[in-house]
Length: 424
Image 1: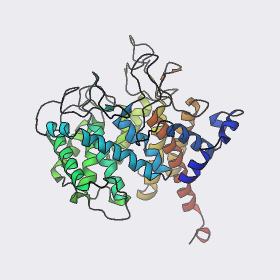
Image 2: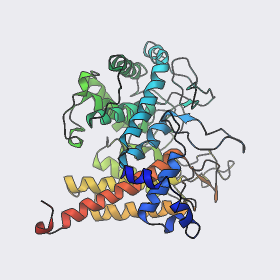
Image 3: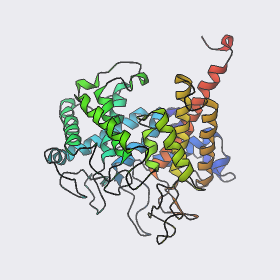
Image 4: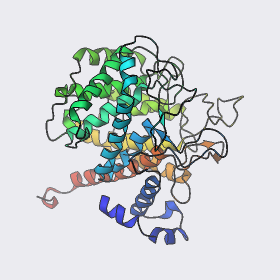
């Protein structure tokens, strides 16, 4: 799939076709190719992805910069089309940034006090795309899910046989241990952070779940073993004590089903189902039900009730929240993942066909609010897109949603084939 995408994305065939067709009228393969081309347009030579092409000329923050979280989620699409080399390059870049600011991690690991917005012991979330210098801002940089996501996915890639750590493995092992020490010093399981949306400070279930997933991956206690063909003992790299997992799980269970004290539900909680798969089936069902009942709108999913970021009416934010197409992609992925799990563990939450139908429904809703040339905007304020088009990690999630749904359908069809027709 990767070679096919790279070859076709390099010619102009789709441009000619788009003169007479809009994106949603293309074939599934053409949609995937064009969406990936837009994502590649945001990729930089060092393997990072700028958040969007927007340079700030219409006001607000410039998004043509790196956000660490955005890079790690934006490159997820590469895994689903088989371009692991590009994904590994992106994670090595994030590792390079952590190494560049390792003094902040060690500073944080030796201080037991709240990590302020731009304190000297916090790695900033926003980075210049070429110099890799931190871009200071007043909003909160202490975001635990960035570290949790890095630990989780880097460990996952290593278990799949990829050399994420690079040639300087001994040095990286020290850095990874410092990250774990940092997390325990700042009491990730009980202290506040600024969360996925960089707002707070509060204790967020999505942040706690992210770190719990990352530490669980490296502790290697068997929670994720079913995902891998070969055994790679990650605990030899970073010895994560069992106690960390126990207190993290207890904290997460106390927070759920809420995201925080002020938010009974939040789109960020979908991360607990995918990519982390760190909640029970019952908890997953409650999270999805809360989001579908309270946050799904006509042009996307609102982040949380009363969100003022790009609100259509900031004086009356409730009911006028910005709508994120990203949420449609995320729900589509979650439902296709549930379809896969229901085939292996039984109909705990529903049937594979039911989940596939829901996944397709959200994919269709997403395509209806994408641009005519296949870009996923960050959000709609009222009926208008904001300038961040495409948003890198939303573009990536569209590719993941489409490809994973196709993969699940293939598995379901294979399982329904008569025994005599199945390939030997």
